[in-house]
Length: 325
Image 1 (tube, rainbow, N blue to C red):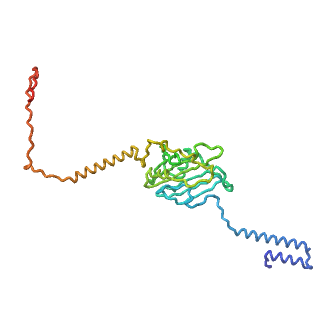
Image 2 (image 1 turned 45 degrees about the vertical axis):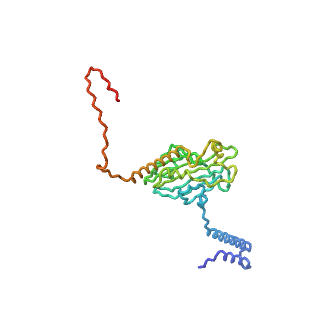
């Protein structure tokens, strides 16, 4: 029983046998077979080397970025930013900004932001960003996906923050937490035909165990957009608003902190009334009580009672009384 030799040694033995004159086979055929064996060995070595590599690939383009790179920043005192997941597109990017959560409702409090550039910035990324229209069906699907099991009721009150009007819905979860879902799309009021100005889409999912509706809305009223594209054509905010009508004119006083409006005067009046009532209560409490002695105080002089008028029989005229001298 013969032991098998490695491919390289077999090819070398065949190459040496081609040089011996006593070999029956032709030398050229043996040389060709030796070369083919060497080529097969090189291919096997290359395949084995490639099989040893382990390059890990990801199917998603989403990656985590530092919290300082968040597009939207909550207001001071609001929920803190926990993590930021970002996905790059040809004409923009989107982020899921996870916020600190203090509730028992299933899900994560977060801002969902999309920044549209309207120009192809990175051609290596195959995907393009699209902002769907904010229809009631679309918003309902978003709320069911991000707050499952919570009955949300859309508010019909018109509200707006520094970026323009927005909509919101509130609901109470099965655990008793109050939830808010707000949406806003920031884009120029007049469509730009030749030079698109870009757009920003913002969503907020926020649930809290102890907060009220006003406290939850405060987060959406006070958020700040901290990112922008360095292009002259990118301007989703539109033209800046004009100054107030009476700014800089005469006979148009402006008071700080609402001191000139009726509400401010009413507040001052309420404070003044409270001060006066406090003074009255203080005076009545601090006033000493006097002891009255019936023996030392003379009784009050009573005025004489008027004589009773005589009864006038019926059928006679009434005579007027004499004048008082």
